[in-house]
Image (tube, rainbow, N blue to C red):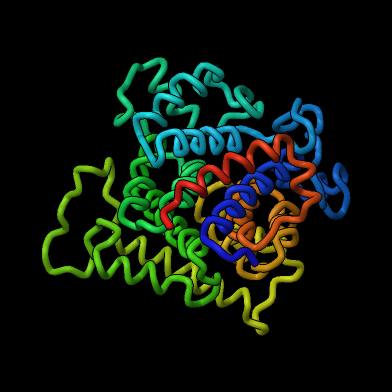
Length: 352
């Protein structure tokens, strides 16, 4: 296992890139028989999308749009030495949006998610300011990019939680989604700091809640919750608390010998195969906890579960990449050396 927060930070970033690229070929197969006819009984490597499918035109080992945006976030964090909303918005305006046309089958990776299409339409066509862009999509795109914010600011929960909230609200306006994203960020932050994904993973984040370190007012207070004008939206802390409890409960279940999901990829059937965060996060927690020292099995079970397997593998990979990614998966990832150098640079900026 890697020994320092910086080592674990690099693993989290590369784990997310590997998980995302593994999903390029078999992305969004809800008919698993069709997926297996096309890719065999067990997908164990990068694959090329079939003609007419999502991401057609990409090759095995390349990233789709989630990887493109994650890399853009990394460049912003590195060049600004931390999260800068102005810089990231400028990158969206000048590096991503000119590549889009508002249609799903467009842009980097040859597919653009609903939340990004919605933001593009409001920003490019309606000329709205960035504080008035976010839409109602309940999908995980924001979590897939804010995981880099978590890596950079894992040691500062107040700054981290505010940055996650601010960045999420740029494209997605659901307070529940915002809260769940902060919950995921807190779990990942503790893993980077050296905790284990088990039934105790939520203890320190719950202390942050009690201490007011996440800048949100507890729902149990007898006084009205104060507004926080620095946040576009105010997450309800009781939802963050529930997100943290859920991660611990799922992690405990994943290690309980009396509770088994066999094969593990069927976790996608238990929690649901679609794109919404309430399907994706429980499956990612389960796989990361069950295979917490086995990156390959964790992400491959995420992929072989079908549906929105790309996000499932990306969120899982960020948690399990902390331990160690097989060299063959790094060798097969396009531009892996460049991405790893970017991750090293980000990690070097983390406080000691």
